[in-house]
Image 1 (cartoon, rainbow, N blue to C red):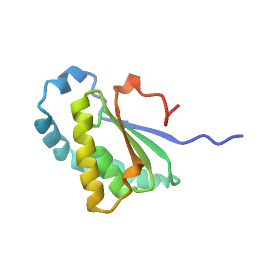
Image 2: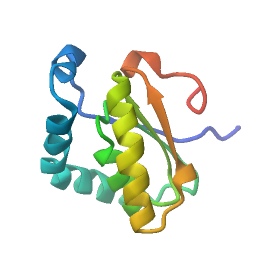
Image 3: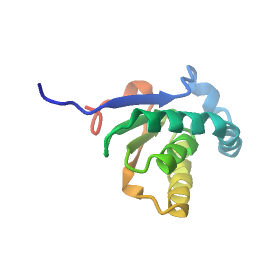
Length: 127
């Protein structure tokens, strides 16, 4: 039996992307900072799974990238795809995540950025 890559899907599950698009990106970023304890918990749960190097994690609706940065800080061997339906949020996520990764000398090639909602992600690296 051929092995298949382990797939994990993370996200807040925001049903209405219109709601997020109505929020100023700076305010949206502060919302994610307030949710840091939740992302620390998700990151700890991922560590408990003992995922292999290169396991892929999909962060749907990541906004300014706080979830992705937190996951990679504690799990530097994972490959994380950070998605949001808003291009401005993906741009912000790129900036924030790269800055945070540089702070703890993590490999920036472990994160990928995609402008897409939950229904628009399915190609590489998740096909």
